[in-house]
Each structure stands twice: as C-alpha cells, then as structure tokens.
Image (cartoon, rainbow, N blue to C red; front, side):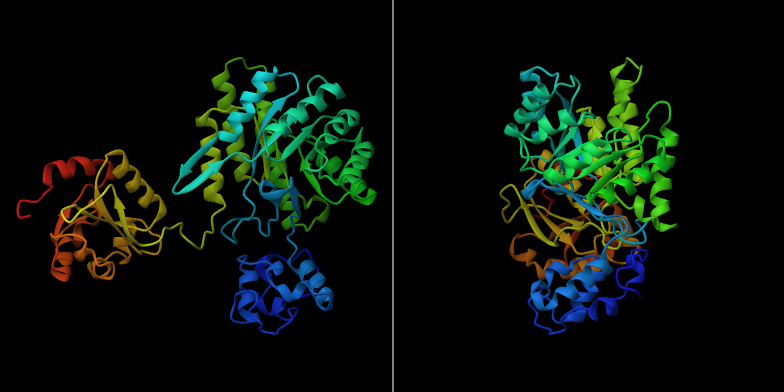
Length: 477
C-alpha cells in the first residue's frame, strides 16, 4: 500500500500497515501491551497515532508524517473554535455507517442575527446554551452559534459578534458575504477560530485572505452548482487555504430532493471517484426553510426538521438551524447520536445493582438488562413512580430483554449468577425477584436454578408501580 494514498479507506488499511511505521519498542506508554495491539486499535478507530508518545519525538518525525498520511480520512477533518468547546467536523473514512464507525457527530448550530434587540439576543444565546436533553444517560446539547449579518453593516455586525462572544464559549460561525463585514466580526473573536461563511465566485479572494490572515476555516459556497464548487475549492486551496467546508446549497421547499442529491453526489465522488477536491466537510443550512414564502410557523419548523434529518442521514457534517422548539431539535440530536454510535458495539451500561430511594431488607428486587435504552427507560419509570427498590442489571452484551432472552444472553443461569455475584441475598431478607414481562418464560427455570421466587412483571416498565401496589409485599414475606 502506498503511504499517503487518500484513496484507501480504513477498511483497506491493516494493522500491519500501521505497525510497520510505529517505533515498535513495545514501550506500553500508550497503555497497550505492545505496538501491534496499538496498531489494531488505531485501525479500528479506537485510538489515534497521537496516543503514541514516542511518535512525537523528533527522531520519529518521518514515521509520524507517513502515518498521518496513511490514516488521513478521505473527508478532511476541520476544527472550529478553540478549547474544550471546539468542534471537529468531517473525518469520514467510509460512505456507509455499517462499513465502519462514523466519527465526529454532526454539530448543530443555532442562528442569531445582528438585527435582534439586545434582550432578545441575550435570551436566545442563553436558551441555546441551556438546551439539554438526557437520552439513555447521555446529555444531548447544541454545539455552536451562527451569527448572521442581515443589516450588512460592519459596525453592527461587530457589536453583535462581541455581544455573543461575551455570553457563550460555544464555537461561532460568522455569516456574511461582504468581506468587510466578516472582518469586522473576526477582529472581535480572532482568538476563537470561527468558521467564515462564505466564499463565493464573487468574493473568494478577499475571503481567502481573511481565512489566511486570521487562521480560520472557510466555507466555500456554490448553491446547486457542484462543478463551480469544485472549481472554487481548487482555486482557494491553490491560494493557500487548507481548512475548507463545502456548502452545496440547501433548498427546503422546493428543491429538497435536489439538495439531498447534491450532498450524496459530492460524497459519492469522494469515495467512489476518489475526488480529492470535494473531500471536505459538508455544511447544511435547514434554516433556509424560514426564508420561504410559507407563513405558518409550525409548517416552516416541520420542513426545517425534515430537511435536517435527511441531511444528517445524507452526509452533512455541520448544520445551521433556526427553530428552538424541542420537537424540532430533539429528533436531530437523537438521530445523530444513534448514527454516530459504533454499529459493532451496542450502547450499554455497566452491570450491577442500582439502588433507588433508600431501600431496606424488605424492598423489592427487579431485574433488567444492560442495554442502555432499556435500562434508562426502566430507571425513568422507577424514579417517576417514586419506587424504592434494588434493580439488578444483567450483562447481556448490551441487548434488550426480548432479544437477550431469544439469543440466550438472558437466562436462568445468568440471572442466578448475577444474584450471587452481586450478593443480592445479603441486601434483602426475602427471596422474591421481579422479572421483566418479556422474560416471563424464564420464570420456572429461574426459580429452580436460583431458589428465589419469581414474580413476572409487566412488559412495559411504566406499569411497575401498579404491579407493586397489587403484589408487594408478597403474602409470605
């Protein structure tokens, strides 16, 4: 394999290819037992070459450069912002998620504009920063703020950028087509590495100058014109700008089908035709739904939500949205979370015993699996019902109850072993355990194997409260 051939996908790179370029000292400074183990994890996307301390030494500079070229993804990684809140976009190795894990989940930026009253601007910034949703144990949040110049006045835009930057540490996107306006904004946040939006066929040189002068990534925009977009990329990269984001245009109504086609065509060109000029992150702007002639806000929001979901599915690496409604944003946050999980590894929680309330020796014992969605659904129902209990989480490899029973991951034996391993019998004075309704067929075997009496619970954990009212404590406790 030729080192630095960006046509290679991660699937074609073997651990041996990486191993040959490592120091091969087996020093264990990376935390792995040897260099081959490290190479395997690098190829699997679990570690990067930066996790190898010796590679950072001057004597291994050539090896580091060769490894960087070897592992470079066909879609370049671009960083927006600085510090802990910076975002990385792009970095895709494959066209389809089932081939290899997608990296760098699509950030969602919310827009503000420089014509907003000061209080409205402050309130919106606060709402963007405070937006959070707990989904199977993960906090889903918004990622950036896009500042749009609607007045096209450098002084007004600069004041707005300064006001936004003073209220948030989120990465910023500066949106204007006038280089003078953009520069007025950049001077207020030149240490924050904002994304510049956007270079076009009319202003590309001035925008490229700004990107170089302030070391900022630059968006290249050519709506619905891929040949022009490609030509602009070639011109701007030859001019000296390396961190680019591509905007092929987002048309919500009409034109959504053409939009999705363009995004797909660009990404296909990278992975099927090995087009390096289009190998940059893609920007989608579903907020353009608000620029249509539609007057009903709910309809506009619905169109924006649909466009955003489709763009996340079809290769958008960054989105700019407008609606703050939960029913618009939550589907996008949950959808990108699920797309960007490792398809080889179910989302799971640690097995063990969880305590809810202040359980004592007479409290009920419930069973569930360590599939994250199952666990957090059960946890939510227990908390909302103010139930005091012990919850035994069985290691089923991150598989849900019904699938775990069918696949023999949740069995009478595994339940019995968990009760023993976690010393549940020492926590309570009774010997009654509540199985999920979807595991009812294991009740007899579990009683025989464990010596515990089984109560078959509901199929839906929201009915646990009623079950305990009707059947707890059992007659013989």
